[in-house]
Image (cartoon, rainbow, N blue to C red; front, side):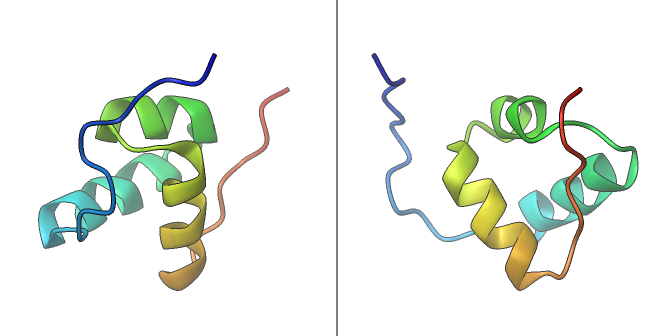
Length: 59
C-alpha cells in the first residue's frame, strides 16, 4: 500500500529546492531524497527534472 502524503500538491519552497539540490549533489537515491523532503518519489523526480538535476539510480 502506498504511503499517504499530507502535503498533497503543495508548491515547492526555495528551501526545499535548495535541499533537493544538496541531496542530489551528494548522490542520494530518489527514495531517500523523497523521505528526507516528505514528498512522493514522483514529485521529487518531476521537480528534479524541472531543476535539471540528475538523481542517481539505487544499486
